[in-house]
Image (cartoon, rainbow, N blue to C red; front, side, top):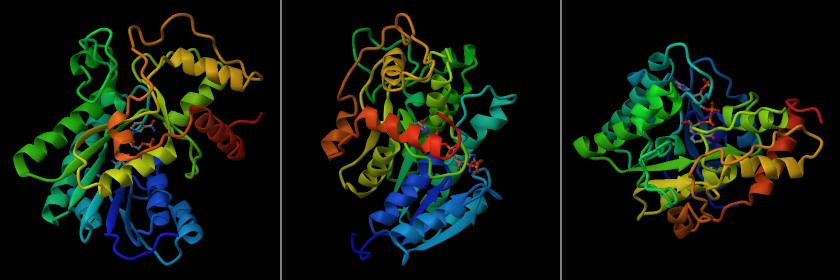
Length: 327
Ligand SMILES: NC(=O)c1ccc[n+]([C@@H]2O[C@H](COP(=O)([O-])OP(=O)(O)OC[C@H]3O[C@@H](n4cnc5c(N)ncnc54)[C@H](OP(=O)(O)O)[C@@H]3O)[C@@H](O)[C@H]2O)c1
């Protein structure tokens, strides 16, 4: 196990969610000893303490209840930390009743509140969890070119189709870069694709639900929300790599390749012939150019991606063991 010396105190927002829990676990495994876990008031964080007991019993894991809309509560969570992993943001693909209140405001104002607190307390670097939903859909992207970090989601296109999650993530990331420009702060953003892997938290999160629904026969083509998939372990490793790498800057796409959702569905179908996985006809993401090393910037920093089959298999086993899947 890594030694406990020399690791800076860090804060993780959304610490009890799917990705947040894996970031906490990976920080503990990497020898971080002072971790402020910021969670939505009243939500369950018991599993984080089980993780601590099994990985790094000497670490100090402190829980801060903070709605990210509450700047003062966020500041209490960030105070004393040198790094912040801002992960908290509503992550649902379901249609909201009030998109502004349910998705956009917590994503944008939450990000600004975290950055304000980071600036106030002299945080060395913030790693912001953005999303491929801040990169696609972008119908203006040149045809024949694989997407990279220079692409931004077309907000008006999404609004006209009532796709509010990409709107929320795009506005949140844009507000972060605007903050950096106006106030100066070291921020690095990570843009994960559909994230799979074992659930450490008790509830079912949106991206693992995509695989579950596919197994149950869903015909949703994920047209607006797909670029590829990535193992949650790789996202957690990438987050820490981005925090620790002095040269890291800007945006980092985090996906094990770019390919059509129909290709993903084919792979799942072959791996799980007992399930009624839908066979999509034609391109589910029209014009999407496949690319194996789309996350070149992270690969160049040293990240090695877990094979897709392992991510699928790990998710299946976890869904079964948690009782979400019974075959
Ligand atoms: N999973 C993916 O495929 C994927 C891909 C790209 C980017 N992302 C991004 O990764 C982050 C984490 O997503 P996830 O997959 O781990 O989903 P998740 O399990 O739903 O985690 C989201 C976390 O944010 C918290 N949260 C939401 N609104 C909040 C608020 N107003 N104040 C405080 N906390 C709040 C949630 O708390 P409660 O559950 O207690 O409400 C939860 O802990 C999000 O920023 C998401 O946009 C996810």
